[in-house]
Length: 344
Picture (tube, one colour):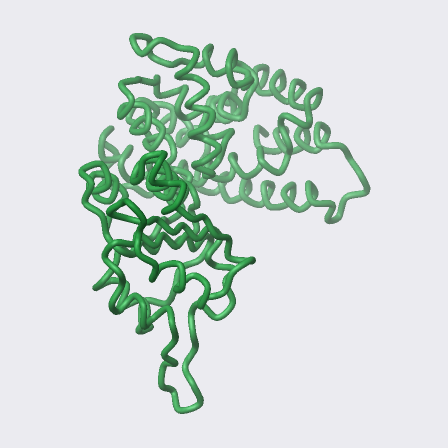
């Protein structure tokens, strides 16, 4: 099931006896388990019918013993197992004959108690879909996989997150947040929540808001540096480099190099497109159509041959930022060297 489908059912009080929430992206797992924890039972029912367990502290037998209890003065009981990936022996391996080992958990999910909501939060990994346990979960439970988003999907995710809450954001502002906050959805959502507390829904969120409430400079950031390099605006690029050098903790070189590598990869992809019309190009390289003019200009300023040199520079300075083949040059000087090589 999808995240939206699960939430819709929960809001409509359509419950399932087992929720196995797995995957590398913890955000959706937390949102679903938090919703169940806060909303399925009322405060009086929670006292006797809601239990939160942690994977490091329990074994399978203990979890099943809780799950098999009947609720007291309630239609349901809720058992939430956080960090379920830490439970020893939860997912049994095959025995010496190649036959999958039957265990208490598999036996329970084959015939779960209808009055129990057992929520397993299995983070940072997913169980093998070929196993009996995965196939059984798919038939008798809600089996949900929370996948990491690629970095080029984060701006659209930001727009969607705000739209569901009746807020709007300008394209440059969503890109700026994506570049600085990365793919950790919990972190991104937390910063977006800060913005919504301070800004009226009638006003579109812009770069000034982000600078004021999140602390990302609207003028001196890696997004503006990318744009300056695309335009070969030497003066602006050097101003940003100096600012980064004076604020190294807020602008670590390793993050800057990573963002620049993604940016120049999109320029290279733009070169390869047979159809460079605005909407098609935006879709293919994974950006808002608002920015296609910038990529078109960048492609003119950076030939494919020049881009190959740029990628070599980026690899070189990524290693130097990690202390490889460098005797201790500070990040500001390394960035200055890198930007000079890219621009010349």
